[in-house]
Image (cartoon, rainbow, N blue to C red; front, side, top):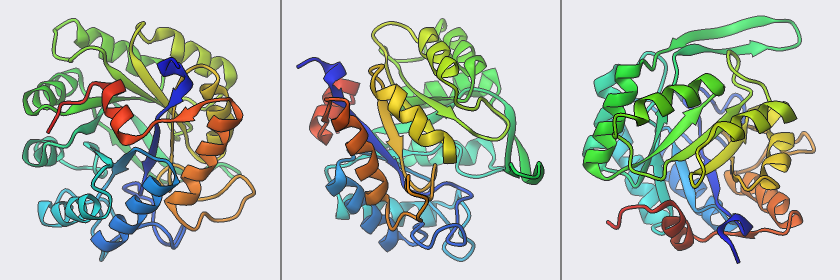
Length: 289
């Protein structure tokens, strides 16, 4: 069986802005993160992408006194899982604060965002912009994040929100700061970036170098159509309460495990098998801890 027949599933447990007001299942406390990680693992995920939260506000936090207990709870509840820490963390987080968890915790994986962009929460029926920021990721930052991750042995997951992000990362790649082959996460549906269309996904995939691994996620209504196309193109899949708080039938997901079950069904309908954490480490070439 080729690696293209094996699908890696990532569960993004909670976004920096996703709250219990959106869905009560969104984890805030370390204990909740541990339970959600375990549910995701049992459902078929081998990676969890994590924005630790301040339990008092529900917002993403750079506070290491809050990040460390979340990481510890996940590792205790699901020690086989691959931890992928967010380096975005939350809007307005300083560069050094974004890098500190990578330097100190040295996770197996971490997100590396590839472009400066509008990033917003919007009402798409009325056009109202509810909250917006400029998400800053300059070329020098991409370079610095890549060098820090290489130094500590963390595999970057290159977050690309449109074709420009791919080109940005490929330019920095010429400096030799990435361990090859690279791993990409194609994100569709963020307000301010590329929405999913079949042609958009085909174009994004066409830009990725041969032999690199890649994954696809879609925000809200972008999710299911993007995943159904991606799984037949050899991509891996990301789901979770960061990306979509609802199931395909419109009901609120009761856990990240339910989100993962959707991805497993999509993969299995396409004739794929689900990678275990051990298989995922081999496919992605993660450094042995």
